[in-house]
Length: 150
Image (cartoon, rainbow, N blue to C red; front, side):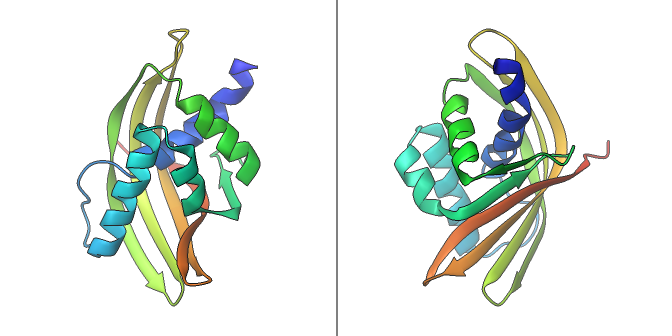
């Protein structure tokens, strides 16, 4: 089962790391704060807070095209909370807003070590989409779109 979870966990880590470190492009304070809050929910293992930031329509898509829905994603986030360590970082390379939709693009580079000492390494570009739904900004998708260029 652990091997099957690695791809989903890798993509979930894109979300975690896209919330950490200084942002390299001009991003409104509201969005910087939102990503700090998202990061805190991950690092403090606050599944209730994490769920409150995601719309039930949320999905993740990995580089190989595998799609995970909201329920599958929450299960993956819960698995992530068991990690021994997460090393790496990200660099925000894009921010755009069109009405009630915000898109944030980030280069993500990380290595995560799990309790059994297995590890996952990822160097990818992720595109996150948020939508304002009933007056609240909610995370609706995360897509790995390309390997990070080195």
